[in-house]
Figure 1 (cartoon, rainbow, N blue to C red):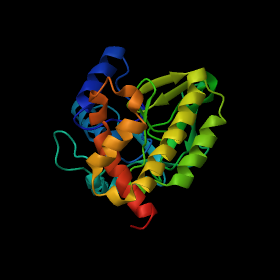
Figure 2 (figure 1 turned 45 degrees about the vertical axis):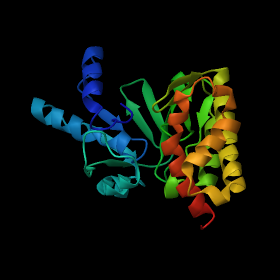
Figure 3 (figure 1 turned 135 degrees about the vertical axis):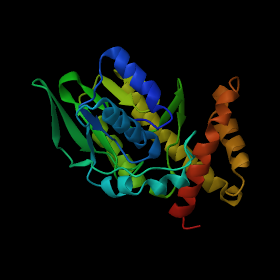
Length: 259
């Protein structure tokens, strides 16, 4: 399995795994150390212990190990729905760029370093099925053609993000699997990459223009909604989804400009 989800969501994932006949898990790969991709490890390890079965091999980038051992850094993001504490995760096997994980006799997964969203971010490439699992590398896609900037405070690195996009674009792909938002296929893959980058620049350009309003996120949300997202004016519920992303992007932008 790739990513564990949060602790609050892990029971639903567990039920689905059982229904699919995919439990017990043998291997679990974490794309990056944010709580909503890691804290479910706690739940799955508890289940393994309860059932007295073999431990799950948990993998992550070698760069993720310090973040996993001290998950308290996640306090800069929105809190877990039902848990006030982010638990540390030990016993994770480190992965290097271009390393391969062999699954059975006929499948191998290649690890590709794709930082930007987080310094420890990796993507998982299944060459034989022309599929890549990108975690949060590329951005957010909450509705058809509704792309949202994914610059997450001080951990975001523009240069790394743009290089990671180019690295992913060079792969032979039929399926692009993004965390939270499902699967993009065929000709839509290139469009997703391009729109993700375009949206990032649009947000940064607006912040440049409205730099005197950085302490007024609701003004910036209104500005984005009335300019960048004006095609979605008939779906006002989407506007509410921008708030956390805008707050994180403002923090990143302030750091970028040393404000």
